[in-house]
Length: 311
Image (cartoon, rainbow, N blue to C red):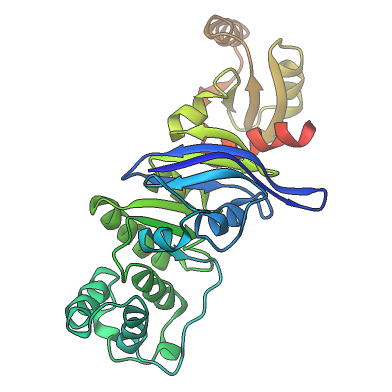
């Protein structure tokens, strides 16, 4: 569906994007993860035909975005991270205005607008002025506007930014419905655990480069050579002694003490881990639990981006 080859955007000597290569399949939800300034919004602006790249090629549904921007705009729905709403319009009028701008006939708009409002859970606000809507409602109204021309591809830049937990859940549920409708969705967010729940694939972008790409499980697997072990001691044990004990163990690094727990990174094999546990039992240490902790998406993101910053 989307092919990105060597995409580069340069401002003087600064690379906002540096030879980005990516393939996004049809009908999936793809999440862009990255810090501010990593290149997410630049990528989305280029895909939305709002920004010309310095170099590279992008096609959506086989159409070159630089050569046929008008055709691309029919295929995509773009929701920027900062968007404007017209406060003097009612929700229904707001959507009607954009539907007219896309050349949708009036009779078709009459049927379409109630359907879109129902999709984004705003049917009860149909005749309300936009300025009285909450931020979450305005976000959902903007999403409805993005859908007005029934695009194949949705490009959503930080759609959950600034929303309270309930509004984030509502937005996530709507995106799941859109995926079920066959839409290809690109979404960027700093809310990493939510991306893990929503997305089929994730790309980690840092300093204008794509540094990891795949399913959440595949990206996590990139760090499987290093495990996170947590050991819980009985209350009252001298944790300074516990720390000293692990400082002398091979394969152990980044030791952290939290109350009566010792957390550390372990880069040994499964056999090495078994030997460590056996040794602790033989020393009759007052251990209540010993186990490997799964790394969530935030752990993976921090670990991968730390490696880039060291280069």
